[in-house]
Each structure stands twice: as C-alpha cells, then as structure tokens.
Length: 168
Image (cartoon, helix red, strand yellow):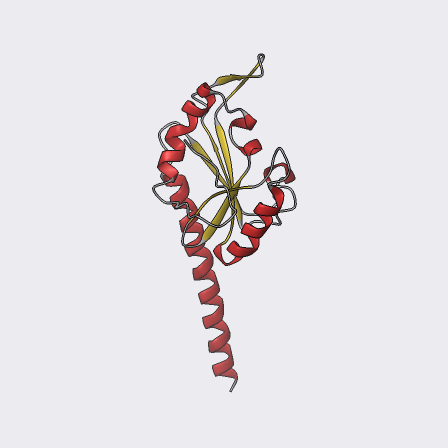
C-alpha cells in the first residue's frame, strides 16, 4: 500500500512542477516577442504594490518592459524611458476580473484596464502603467512596436461593458 501512495504523491509533485514550468515558459514567450531595445523583467513573487491595480488582488506574475534606448519628455522637465507593466492573472479568474474592471471604470485615473488574454492568462494594465501615464504622440509612438509585438501572442476579446486598453 505504501509504495502505491508514494508513487501517487511523486506523480502529483511531478505534474505540479510541470505545470509551473509550462507557465514559466509562457511568461518567457511574452518576453521573447519584445522588439530590439526592449528589456523584460518577469516577477512572480514579492510584488511591489505600485505595480498592482488598486484592489485587483495578487496576480500570478507581473511583466515589466522598458526601453532604455529611447526617451521622451514627460511633464516639461522629466525625461523617461518608454515602459509597460502587465499584470497576469489565471485565465480562470476572467469573469471575476471583468466584473472588477467594469466596477472600477467610474474612477478617473490609475484604473485597471483589460489588455488582453492568452490561453493561460488574463492580462490587466493601467494608464499609470503605460509610459508612466504619459500619452503624448511621442510617448505613444515610442511604445507602439512593443504593443504590436505583444499582440502576436495576446488576443483582445470583446466583453459586454468592458473597455479594453487602446494600443493604437
């Protein structure tokens, strides 16, 4: 009886670790599509609260993109690099997150926005997480190639009442 129990426990551990490896490779895929010049950081624990939409709950991962080769002027006196923060949640939380995002649309700034989804992840960003909240023509043009590359893996679906983040 004990050998069977040990076998089952070993099998379960192996399956769980394979699932974690598969999710890690999916995260890596999102980084791998980034255009030249873009850096990508995957964070899976010890999240900075400044990288989380208010009241959204803990994501599976945060992916932070930054292009240190480009810069633009933000607010007359501050030069910054283009950047994007994406919060990734389990796709099984999709309906709960849609309801949450819709409930937050009454607020004016730093609200969570639907960025898109993959087979495994429901992805949220915020106006505050895109180029530090700068949406000038220059800022938008400097991040356009990143949005285009990410859309090769991320689909944007239509949901009643949900306004997706506009990457155009």
